[in-house]
Image (cartoon, rainbow, N blue to C red; front, side, top):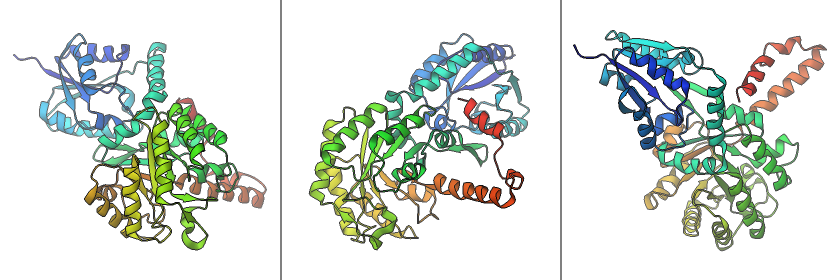
Length: 434
């Protein structure tokens, strides 16, 4: 009589007693097959790997009692279960609630098709396990790991989904928001955008590059202290070239993944005002020199300098936008951001298609603030690599806070606003999970 098949899946880079407990439990029922979750699936699972898939496979193979290691390509179990048809699947019981519960429900349905059994092991919550988990999180947050992650994501993801963060709390929201997309799949943001507009607004200052770099770097520190996702920094015009090179050095040292600078000069005016206010576009020669200066001083290939083309915003035409984009790439730009204030994405998609006809490799960045009906998938189909939701958290927070303040004054008490407030307990839990 052949031994029964037992399957479990790991995403970890480090084995601790909790994983050993899973293996030991699995061995009781038959031959243990371990699935190594792929990089693509791991990042949707909020488990960005710090070692390669090959290294993880080697680590799992070394565990006593493991008979085989395979790659689980997707987060949900359907494909691997239908392929292996294991008699048992062993998993920790920590996925009964929260976002991961959808994976559990999907697995149970798949097992029920042929009579497979799910065995859940009580999650190991010793101090040593907590310490190991904390160390892994600290490793992900370290500059040398965080900085390179954006380029890794561009290679892995169809499109890198980026949300603005302007504080430690908003950073935590971006870090921890996970949704069920249906069919047992989870999704989340991949990176954070530190916007000059949102940073200035949070400080009660106008968006005219008034907030100095020391203050803006402090915002980055606040976010980095409690998160692990890569950060893209809004560098506005980049200031004088002599100042820009120091900004590049500082951001790279901090572990920021990229800076985006726009090809305008003079007092900063928000791009969405377009030609309604006076805005001056830099010459191609000067802006290329600024890009080149930044490229010369950076020390790693990981840090990206992305050039933001403002031609469509300033109604200079498609040919001007494309001419500038190709010139900036030639000067060393690691990516191109194209912006528009039109309500439809037509001119953005036209730009992307024409750019991709000549350049298949350089990452393209889009910020769909005004043309907000287009989906991530549609942008990816036109060659977009990074989508930035540049100010939505700020814009959603302020009306809510203003309404609450108004109602407390109106009713002379807080009862009327309470039902739309997040419980203090939930806020504490969000922070205590660090």
